[in-house]
Image (tube, rainbow, N blue to C red; front, side, top):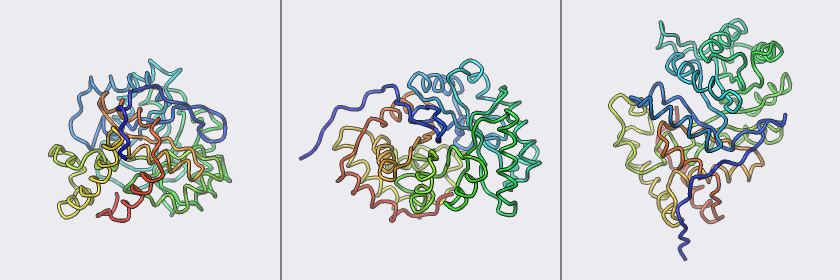
Amino acid sequence: MTNIQTPLAPHSLAQVRLGSDGLLIGAQGLGCMGMSEFYGATDEAEARATLDRALDRGVTLFDTADMYGVGENEVFLAPFLKANRGRALVATKFGYARTPERPDDWSIDNRPDYIRAAVDRSLARLGIETIDLYYMHRRNRDVPLADSIGAMAELVAAGKVRRLGLCEVDGDELRQAHAIHPIAALQSEWSLFSRDIEDAAAPVAAELGVTVTPFSPLGRGLLTRRDFAASLSADDARRHFPRFSPENLQANARLVETVERVAAERGVTPAQTALAWLYAKGRTLGVTVVPLPGTRRRARLDENVAAASLVLSAAEEATLDTLAEAVRGVRV
């Protein structure tokens, strides 16, 4: 029997804990990268309205990085943070060595001296005195983890950073880092199409009380509708990603048909279905999950936030669980 429901209405998010220190944040964050780079032109007025709407809906964690727009995304967020500093928390990252002078330098720098300089640059661009959550964007394994985490811990002691996070590390690295200084959040790609984190890193996060903040929870848009790629502008970086290539896109779009079918039977959207699946996986693994869907539009923000109240049935989860193994193309 088909389970038809009224489309989910926008509402204010519940709060969950970030890490184990008791700080409460909205159960969904906002990925801000696309407001400044990679995904084509941005309507600045609409993007700023989306930031305000997010805060109104209970989103409190706003995610950026020093390499998004080679610093411009942090600058973009600065007025919003100044106006809402008592409510809005900002997460930013160091690691990629991109600069305005070398925008194509994708090397990773985890040296302590680099970290100390990077945090000061981010603080200046953001116009704040303390970063709420500071991530190592990627790991350079030529630098001992103890050196990098030690330098990050110094930033906490100096009052420049409140909490530490890591991106795309494995379970052993997360455990090692957490033993040096408490890690509040692990950010890795996690979605119906990307489930590597479930093998080891997410279980370790659950054990240690580390919150997982999945990026690209909607498969960089692929999971929103089967014809999503047709809407990409000519300068959208996703056109160059393996999963969007002509040889892979058709097969991946067929997988999205399954998401659309489950969504239609519930009277919700594919994006809401994909996000609900992610929340369900967090409950199964015993880890707090705060997805970071990125959007520049208020309507999409409302759609994504509403997904936090959607609970899938066991049969729906089982149907969706089969998709990742059939995805074509590596993630980037």
